[in-house]
Image (cartoon, rainbow, N blue to C red; front, side, top):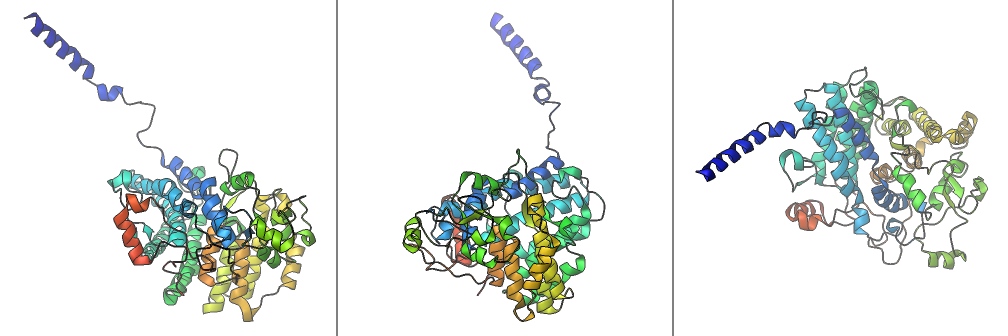
Length: 490
């Protein structure tokens, strides 16, 4: 009898304690869902990413393959066309876990909260920027099933064909541009790129459409022209006020700047320095390593494809201290801005659209505007990077637009203007073929002495997602540096 009473009392106490237990374990001061504005800020910062992938995929590989930089350091694999698989996969490793996961989550929340269409449009544009960078660098990548682990428990995403990804990215840009107006988005200042200015986002959407439309030039010239025409009609960037860039600070450091703080080995390539002869940008972008001298006559570029022993054999120099490095007084800081798309790039594309198809008006005027914008935008690095109008005018007088060589001239200037945005440099070089770069043939390279055409997937995919990884290789080709992505056909 006594035992039964104890059991009954225990049951009553337990049930009383359990009543309302769920409510007691919910913090009333903590939101169930993180505010969308905070998520947008985080996603935009994730686009800029961190030292890890900016060092490896951005600088070690692409900046040296594109001969903006060179170095004798052996671990700078891109300078020598050797294969460090962890370095090569660094961008895809970081982007899927950060920015892509963030924007996919945001799109679900935007629908759940019935958010305004302009908020959805801005998020979709950020999403396009992220996926475009990934697919341009790797080719076929997870897209329709990407970022879904917490949304639909899809843990093993398929790799979509780049052709299908591009079709959807362009559709997303068109629809997003159409959804944007002229007011300030509800995101407000949480939008750390445009402060919610819908008109700027609309012009960006069309400018990105212009970029991606031009990517199709080798694989589908007709579609390329159609999308370029549509982008121009929709309204693209109009001045340096429209540049898409991220300001950095001590709490959100520029990943490239963190690399330069940690690694003193990169030098300006002699290819780059030679192209900048007589260019007022040279003393802003470069300085002599040994003493910081920025006198153009004293700035010498380092040839690509050398190690320290080869440099000694070639020049008799034991180190590269007398060669130009990125100017540490101006452009390499951890709080320097990071650029994603610029007005200068847009003007160069408009110039090319005029040459190819008679679009957008006077190609020479667009070329001159592009060069001018590329020089003036450097002022975003600070007063020490301001170039006088007279110096710009002199440069254009000494380097006039050449209608007979326009495509090469335009895209060579594009290559200069995208310095430090090496993802775009590499993509536009593959798309246009300019500037003409002389490959290196470093001993032990894996490309037979040719400039790589892509970077490679994560090694972990071979074991964690083997069927989809194998299907991607069957569709695209071997997971090698020399395999061309869909739009980069010979």
